[in-house]
Length: 329
Ligand code: F6P
Image (cartoon, rainbow, N blue to C red; front, side):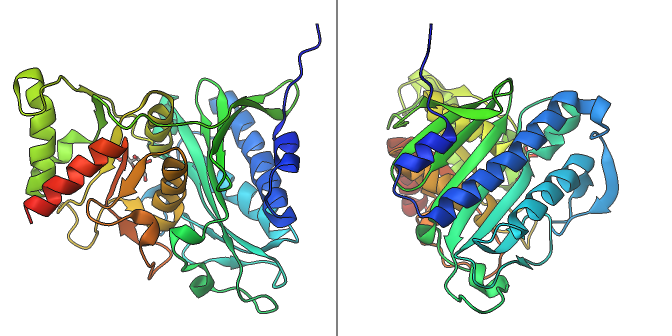
């Protein structure tokens, strides 16, 4: 029996993105196919363990962080449409073709503490317009609000490899077929339910949170007999890609809130490599994404590596967290 499938290439051909965006998405996903193959081979591909360096974020670099970063960087800087690339792993952006039309930002291996334990990790990317054509791109060119994004997505390397993508026309998901070497469309028009009974947070940081966040989690944990009048479930994958993916599939709220653990950081997650691309996807799926007060996509970036608190997912639940922050200011 012949079964018609829609590949990523078919999908992009039918949608109203520019040739530059289509081409850059194809380049990113090809690199992700290679990352997926390496992950499947694990220790056999000598990708586990640390390289002994710290990245720009002050975190130990895993071997695969470096490999994934190099694969994406090399592929993108040779794509004629790409004017520059910024990676969570590198201090500064890398210029590419000054006549390119887009800039690409990526987190090559999100949740990299999961690599060595054979759990879910991912690649996150964000595509911005290049507004200074003819001139070599610098870090400043990347400092655009999340609302400017032309496309964003993530590839989740889990039990299967899944690409979730938005070009501003809703959210679509593809599963990678290793036999066909193609991403195949599995779901269109992904939507998040506005209500939920499931939250995701690293609860070990409780003592560092602000009072409204402590109150929110206390209320969830009080369950049916508390003010929320329902029992909540908790999940934490320790890779944002995994938690966001779960929310897109079965709902929920995810937060890495403001905390006082590191006085010089507003939160743990990075605005440009994690919060913005995921917020674009979440909003396109009908959810909401804020820093507990303001919409993430409206934040004016001042530094390509800046961090931001994140509260995203089910609309009504995110609104409730915002309300607690407003009331308890
Ligand atoms: O940004 C890195 C990241 O790995 C996210 O993907 C994830 O949500 C979070 O950090 C996990 O943090 P923790 O190690 O505090 O659980």
